[in-house]
Length: 190
Image (tube, rainbow, N blue to C red; front, top):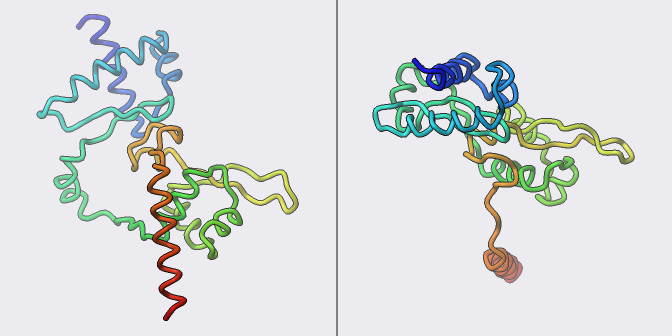
Protein backbone atom coordinates (compact mmCIF):
# COMPACT_ATOMS: atom_id res chain seq x y z
CA UNK A 1 0.00 0.00 0.00
CA UNK A 2 1.46 3.36 -0.99
CA UNK A 3 1.36 6.40 1.30
CA UNK A 4 -1.75 7.86 -0.37
CA UNK A 5 -3.69 4.61 0.05
CA UNK A 6 -2.49 4.33 3.64
CA UNK A 7 -3.73 7.86 4.38
CA UNK A 8 -7.12 7.11 2.79
CA UNK A 9 -7.38 3.93 4.89
CA UNK A 10 -6.55 5.91 8.03
CA UNK A 11 -9.20 8.53 7.21
CA UNK A 12 -11.77 5.79 6.68
CA UNK A 13 -10.80 4.19 9.99
CA UNK A 14 -11.09 7.48 11.85
CA UNK A 15 -14.52 8.26 10.39
CA UNK A 16 -15.80 4.71 10.90
CA UNK A 17 -14.58 4.45 14.49
CA UNK A 18 -15.75 7.88 15.61
CA UNK A 19 -19.29 7.26 14.33
CA UNK A 20 -19.97 10.98 14.23
CA UNK A 21 -18.58 13.92 12.33
CA UNK A 22 -14.87 14.67 12.69
CA UNK A 23 -13.42 18.09 11.96
CA UNK A 24 -11.05 18.32 9.02
CA UNK A 25 -8.44 20.01 11.22
CA UNK A 26 -8.48 17.11 13.70
CA UNK A 27 -7.97 14.56 10.92
CA UNK A 28 -5.15 16.64 9.46
CA UNK A 29 -3.45 16.94 12.84
CA UNK A 30 -3.78 13.21 13.55
CA UNK A 31 -2.30 12.27 10.18
CA UNK A 32 0.23 15.11 10.20
CA UNK A 33 -0.91 16.44 6.82
CA UNK A 34 -2.53 19.67 5.63
CA UNK A 35 -6.30 20.17 5.71
CA UNK A 36 -6.30 20.62 1.93
CA UNK A 37 -4.75 17.15 1.58
CA UNK A 38 -7.47 15.68 3.85
CA UNK A 39 -10.18 17.25 1.69
CA UNK A 40 -8.55 15.92 -1.49
CA UNK A 41 -8.27 12.39 -0.07
CA UNK A 42 -11.87 12.42 1.21
CA UNK A 43 -13.08 13.48 -2.24
CA UNK A 44 -11.30 10.43 -3.68
CA UNK A 45 -12.85 8.15 -1.06
CA UNK A 46 -16.27 9.65 -1.83
CA UNK A 47 -15.76 8.81 -5.51
CA UNK A 48 -14.79 5.23 -4.59
CA UNK A 49 -17.99 4.93 -2.52
CA UNK A 50 -20.20 5.99 -5.44
CA UNK A 51 -20.04 2.42 -6.76
CA UNK A 52 -23.34 0.53 -6.47
CA UNK A 53 -21.58 -2.27 -4.61
CA UNK A 54 -20.70 0.03 -1.70
CA UNK A 55 -23.22 0.67 1.10
CA UNK A 56 -21.33 3.57 2.65
CA UNK A 57 -20.82 7.24 1.90
CA UNK A 58 -18.99 10.14 3.47
CA UNK A 59 -20.92 13.36 3.95
CA UNK A 60 -19.60 16.84 4.63
CA UNK A 61 -21.13 18.82 7.48
CA UNK A 62 -19.76 22.36 7.71
CA UNK A 63 -16.02 21.79 8.23
CA UNK A 64 -16.31 18.11 9.19
CA UNK A 65 -16.81 14.71 7.58
CA UNK A 66 -18.90 11.75 8.69
CA UNK A 67 -19.17 8.21 7.40
CA UNK A 68 -22.71 6.92 7.10
CA UNK A 69 -24.79 4.41 5.19
CA UNK A 70 -26.45 5.01 1.84
CA UNK A 71 -30.24 5.46 2.00
CA UNK A 72 -30.81 2.43 -0.23
CA UNK A 73 -29.46 0.18 2.56
CA UNK A 74 -31.87 1.45 5.24
CA UNK A 75 -34.42 -1.33 4.78
CA UNK A 76 -31.90 -4.02 5.66
CA UNK A 77 -30.54 -1.95 8.55
CA UNK A 78 -34.00 -1.47 10.02
CA UNK A 79 -34.64 -5.21 9.91
CA UNK A 80 -31.42 -5.86 11.83
CA UNK A 81 -32.04 -3.05 14.31
CA UNK A 82 -35.55 -4.44 15.02
CA UNK A 83 -37.49 -1.32 14.24
CA UNK A 84 -35.69 1.47 16.09
CA UNK A 85 -37.92 4.14 17.63
CA UNK A 86 -39.02 6.37 14.79
CA UNK A 87 -39.13 10.09 15.39
CA UNK A 88 -42.13 11.61 13.69
CA UNK A 89 -41.96 15.24 12.72
CA UNK A 90 -45.53 16.54 12.75
CA UNK A 91 -46.59 19.66 10.86
CA UNK A 92 -46.23 21.67 14.09
CA UNK A 93 -42.69 20.38 14.64
CA UNK A 94 -41.73 20.99 11.00
CA UNK A 95 -43.13 24.51 11.10
CA UNK A 96 -41.26 25.30 14.32
CA UNK A 97 -38.07 23.70 13.00
CA UNK A 98 -38.32 25.73 9.79
CA UNK A 99 -38.61 28.96 11.75
CA UNK A 100 -35.60 28.06 13.88
CA UNK A 101 -33.54 26.98 10.86
CA UNK A 102 -34.18 30.16 8.88
CA UNK A 103 -34.20 32.68 11.75
CA UNK A 104 -31.47 31.25 14.02
CA UNK A 105 -30.45 32.27 16.56
CA UNK A 106 -34.04 32.83 17.64
CA UNK A 107 -35.93 33.07 20.95
CA UNK A 108 -39.12 31.21 21.86
CA UNK A 109 -41.02 34.50 21.90
CA UNK A 110 -39.88 35.20 18.32
CA UNK A 111 -41.05 31.73 17.24
CA UNK A 112 -44.39 32.24 19.01
CA UNK A 113 -44.82 35.66 17.37
CA UNK A 114 -44.31 34.10 13.93
CA UNK A 115 -46.47 31.02 14.59
CA UNK A 116 -49.12 32.82 16.62
CA UNK A 117 -49.24 30.08 19.28
CA UNK A 118 -47.13 28.77 22.17
CA UNK A 119 -44.16 26.66 21.09
CA UNK A 120 -42.79 25.15 24.34
CA UNK A 121 -43.78 21.58 23.44
CA UNK A 122 -42.46 21.82 19.88
CA UNK A 123 -39.10 23.30 20.89
CA UNK A 124 -38.67 20.74 23.69
CA UNK A 125 -39.50 17.87 21.31
CA UNK A 126 -37.06 19.18 18.70
CA UNK A 127 -34.39 19.37 21.39
CA UNK A 128 -35.22 15.79 22.43
CA UNK A 129 -34.77 14.73 18.78
CA UNK A 130 -31.43 16.61 18.82
CA UNK A 131 -32.46 18.77 15.86
CA UNK A 132 -32.38 21.99 17.90
CA UNK A 133 -30.14 23.19 20.72
CA UNK A 134 -29.67 26.18 23.00
CA UNK A 135 -27.11 28.59 21.58
CA UNK A 136 -26.87 30.92 24.55
CA UNK A 137 -28.85 33.86 25.85
CA UNK A 138 -29.95 37.11 24.22
CA UNK A 139 -28.48 40.26 25.77
CA UNK A 140 -31.91 41.72 26.57
CA UNK A 141 -34.19 42.01 29.61
CA UNK A 142 -34.90 38.56 31.01
CA UNK A 143 -31.99 37.14 28.96
CA UNK A 144 -34.15 34.72 26.92
CA UNK A 145 -32.61 31.56 25.51
CA UNK A 146 -31.54 31.50 21.87
CA UNK A 147 -32.16 28.40 19.78
CA UNK A 148 -30.57 27.10 16.60
CA UNK A 149 -30.22 23.91 14.61
CA UNK A 150 -27.71 21.15 15.32
CA UNK A 151 -25.35 19.05 13.29
CA UNK A 152 -27.99 16.28 13.49
CA UNK A 153 -30.40 18.63 11.69
CA UNK A 154 -27.84 19.12 8.91
CA UNK A 155 -27.37 15.35 8.62
CA UNK A 156 -31.07 14.50 8.53
CA UNK A 157 -32.00 17.18 6.03
CA UNK A 158 -28.94 16.71 3.84
CA UNK A 159 -27.59 20.24 4.01
CA UNK A 160 -23.98 21.21 4.54
CA UNK A 161 -24.68 24.27 6.70
CA UNK A 162 -27.43 26.79 7.42
CA UNK A 163 -26.30 28.90 4.46
CA UNK A 164 -27.21 26.09 2.04
CA UNK A 165 -30.87 25.85 3.10
CA UNK A 166 -33.26 26.24 0.17
CA UNK A 167 -34.29 29.83 -0.50
CA UNK A 168 -37.85 31.02 -0.90
CA UNK A 169 -39.23 32.05 -4.25
CA UNK A 170 -40.79 35.54 -3.77
CA UNK A 171 -43.63 34.64 -6.15
CA UNK A 172 -44.53 31.63 -4.00
CA UNK A 173 -44.59 33.82 -0.88
CA UNK A 174 -47.08 36.17 -2.57
CA UNK A 175 -49.16 33.17 -3.66
CA UNK A 176 -49.22 31.82 -0.08
CA UNK A 177 -50.25 35.24 1.25
CA UNK A 178 -53.10 35.46 -1.27
CA UNK A 179 -54.31 31.95 -0.38
CA UNK A 180 -54.24 32.79 3.33
CA UNK A 181 -56.16 36.03 2.77
CA UNK A 182 -58.78 34.18 0.67
CA UNK A 183 -59.13 31.55 3.41
CA UNK A 184 -59.61 34.23 6.09
CA UNK A 185 -62.21 36.00 3.90
CA UNK A 186 -64.13 32.75 3.30
CA UNK A 187 -64.16 31.93 7.04
CA UNK A 188 -65.35 35.42 7.98
CA UNK A 189 -68.21 35.18 5.45
CA UNK A 190 -69.51 31.92 7.00
